[in-house]
Image (cartoon, rainbow, N blue to C red; front, side, top):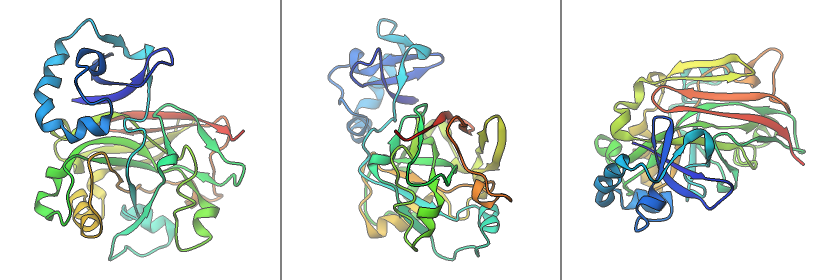
Length: 286
């Protein structure tokens, strides 16, 4: 299934199921369901059957073009992101392939809708793109075994780990440079894990102003999804609705000669096979 958070005519957020070119409102068809995506994910085992039956509904369907798709989870509890996780990206940065996973976090205030504008901040013009597959945690847990890790995945999204490079490089800790407002767009919806199958077979690319800048496949991840969840859960309890940005392939602006940054008016699009696409126009911070 493809599950979305959306609004109609600037109304309240609703949960919906994407079916072709329409979205069916779960919030209206099943008002007894949780009102948030995190709540729905937490109770998915008991509600999935009812949610699938709603696909037949006509009364609560909207044309997909007539709704505003929001970030599927507007306020995740955690947003963890791994760095240097595609070999070609490691090479273009001049770094060595890490023996240990390199982690940082993005802030919940960085969350942005899949088609909402990305800010070029007053603080810096050095804003870069990073196409990433995003994992949505379903069943939470601590000390998750690697061979059971994918049982804890609810689904997957497209994401853009937007990065302010000079702020990122000021210290060994990347958190501020990766956490500016609007710099964690993801969506356009959550594609459930059963519909994706193996997440390590998906084409991924980033297109800026119609020009392909990144093109790879998730088969090229250095540390796979199960590696990531097994390691993270040794340190922290993963909870329903947490986000995991799984790394970006080569082709970022920082590695170009001369370096190239996003600027107001640019359009940046992330496409991932089976997961759809997100696209944003860059705007100057007011």
